[in-house]
Amino acid sequence: MRTHSRRLLRPGLAIAFAIAAAAFASPNAQSQTFSVVHTFTGGADGGNPQAGLVAGTEGNFYGTASSGGQYGAGDVYEMASTGTVTVLYSFTGAADGSAPTAALLFLDGALYGTTSAGGAYGAGTVFEVTLAGKETVLYSFTGGADGSAPGAGLAHDASTNLYGTTFAGGTGGNGTVFELLHPKNGSTPWPELVLYSFGAVGDGTNPVSGVALDKAGNLYGTTSVGGTGGYGNVYQLVPSSSTPWTENILHQFQLLTDGGTPYAGIVLDHAGNLYGATTDGGQDGQDGGGTIFKMSNVDGAWTFTVLYGLEGWGISGSFRNILVASPTLIYATTHCDGANNDGTVFELKETKGVWGYTVLYTFTGGSDGYYLFSSPVLDHKGSLYGTTRYGGTGSAGVLFKIKLP
Image (cartoon, rainbow, N blue to C red; front, top):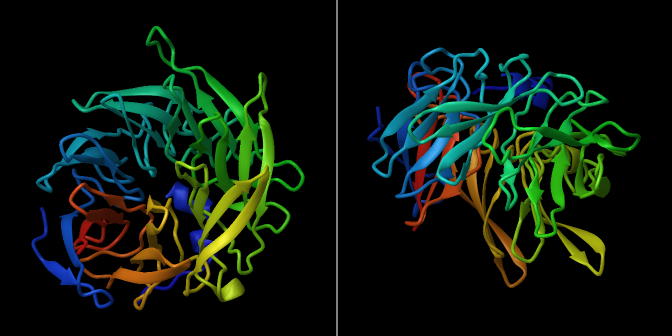
């Protein structure tokens, strides 16, 4: 059994860092079927994926591997509906970027993402990869006031402007929220606007996740640390004719029953409610395994509600965004929780106002993989897909499928 300390799991280190035929029956939910779709070798096909998949067209999915590839700097890959994995682009580790750790954005038939390192200045990039495998660097971070180490995925508006976060950099060195303006003439680099630099008194710092955009153009996200309690917060950024945008702190985590250290970002539903997850705290207070929470705006006031407090132990909860399948159904992963401390995939389902918790699969740390940094994604046939960062036959991670009943 692997063990690790909180220090080894701090977000800064997390960022800086043959189809299998066998099927596994979950010890917790026998009606589900778990299978390994692809075992990463750490070689040409990539290795150590930290992000989940994004759906494309015709049943295809796309993802990133943080290491491996042709040059050892990570890659962008396609998983066909048949389960076959094909590398679309391998990063060289130079001006094109290296170490992609975030999920991709599928937009207008192309893939958009970030690399946490590499680029012209070594501080990361925002890139586009076509389905034919052509990569274009849209922006290279300098590591200064414009930000550094973008480890999260991107959001977009109706004009195809891109929004994201950097873990570090900015005027205070504590991370930024940025916008890349889509040039009408197709030129590069795309102009960058720093919408907000973290680090003010009482402010959160070091966002691991990206941002969500509502219909009014407001941005929502989380910071992993900082704030009045030191355990991160939920924030809103309101558009302004100049920068910085106006920040409103919606919740300050205290590492009590509310949770703490949110690495996951915010998910918006159609009614404007916010959903998110913390990695720590919860039903056991400081020794809990994180929370799944919801925030609703009633007459201009935000209400914070814990939907479920996970068992577990410090920083073992959900590292990436949860999947809100409906107002009464949520899917998510835990990083290193479960009977084997190797991670789980679970379901939350509301019945008559009570959220029930069901483990869909508990990872064993063997050929099925271990340590999940990814969000689950659901296909049109009712199957969940995700990745593990480690494990598999070569310990470079796996891509898995859970067929739901």
